[in-house]
Length: 340
Ligand code: UDP
Image 1 (cartoon, rainbow, N blue to C red):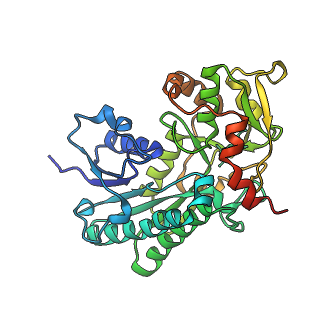
Image 2 (cartoon, protein in one colour):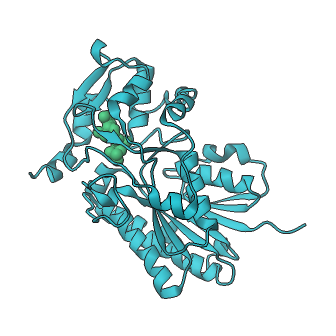
Image 3 (cartoon, rainbow, N blue to C red):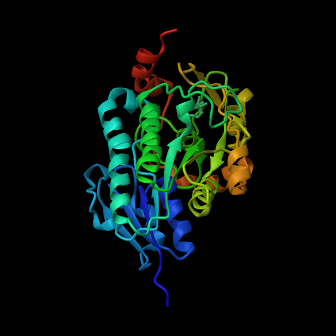
């Protein structure tokens, strides 16, 4: 029998990374997950516990060496490891730059050496936050305007990835993910990620904390669609490319409340101040990925939300946010960004 091809997934115990791992195992790859288990959880991969094709290496990408054995003979690298969230990035910019930029450089070097004669593709999880307050629908060649250190660090990570493509001929692609959501989306940690916030509030029977007037919209994209985009970017002949990964179909926050069963007119909602630097609308122009890779989002917003609601109990232990605790958690945000 032919030996399985090797794929490395950094951050493979995290939200999107664990779904990537599912997809690769399903396709018959031997998957080596690297995760420091800070944001990621072993339970995200528990359903593969007996699968000999999966290995989990508990390690930090900042400690990777170019000769790391994890990358030996690797065919595909999917690089999701990094740190997210806006507020902590404003408070600890050094950590964000170290992990998301330098950690990416270390991952690139390990891939370059370990995959010397085998590497087919290095696919980077970039962030649509690099566009800042952009014109919409946003194309890949629109101006880059990071609004906070997280966005800057993910963008500089992307620059490193493309640079390794240019200088070392590494076959790379970068995927600018819009608002990914789906099962296993983070339930703990810093304030942010609207799904976790609202699900916990729903479970507690507390009002949804809607920012601004709730008419702002996000181009939400379901996690399995994101993963399929990465998979296709690894298989396609296109290299050195940047792709938006969004549904090209923004949804308002009030509509999300409605899908969760909330009624704005009967006290289910409490409005909290709009956050400076936050776009009113994120909206991917997905023309490039559709035409070049033949990718199409398959899961509608309505279906995605319903699927997540089936597992709402997973949010029982998540932090319960209210206007006061949100005001405290976002104080630094307002302090540094409210300059206009
Ligand atoms: N949002 C909200 N209430 C919350 C948290 C978020 O109304 O308690 C809104 C926020 O204004 C934004 C959207 O939900 O329009 C997505 O926010 P998230 O923090 O998930 O992602 P972002 O797009 O801001 O990175």
